[in-house]
Length: 324
Image 1 (cartoon, rainbow, N blue to C red):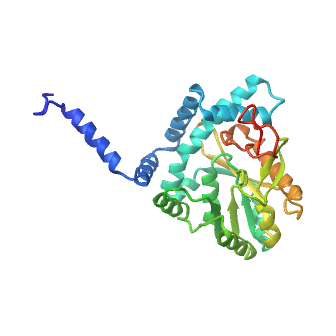
Image 2: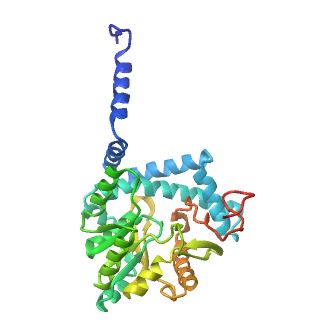
């Protein structure tokens, strides 16, 4: 192609224009546009890209690979190094798939998303809770596709879910809209939001929490998770004590070859609502550990779950340093 009057080729001018347009977009607009474009993918295509991204994370020895390897060494000391490395690679691939599935869960029609659920294991626990008129507290750890889990329950029940607001306000508005398109409420973890959860549970409705994050601030407890003492939220036991709700642990297991998902619902360990915070958080962590052991490769081991330990103990992610 002949050069333009200023000597630049046409493709170079177009590329510059595209770069300028991208720079003109706000972070929220750029992120939302990317999610909407990714939401056009079929499930198998999204999962294929996700597996590729996971392998890139492994091959380039990223921080995610390092954290995953550390976590697996803590949680599965009985495994050989080869077994842990195999699981670490699989975990990174599954986490990549989860990230690529989120746009589908947010952008696809609800009916299309729910059509991916091929089997429900433990549905009788839901009927048991609803027959007694009790509220239902869903504990959904970062296992499998938790966005699909939330979508399923919000399609069946009046529900509220606890969330942490992102730093970008426009993106928060988008997230609330897509997650709440079946009527689910998203509430912040402040006093007002927690009061809303308790109110719904007392009315026999449903509330959802991601229970495996490392909580900040005071008022929490240290309890074993895969054998290591770690700071654990006491929020779950407080909600149960104040509402009388029934707790269950739930996750959406990813099936092979893009075949969809299997929704799993499990009983929690006894003592999860105990007034003693150590007893309650120990039961909570054991409940999470039980389901993680069912499909450990689909857990988000890339998260630094063990960063908050009792003061003075070795820091698992910073060799030679101790926790404060």
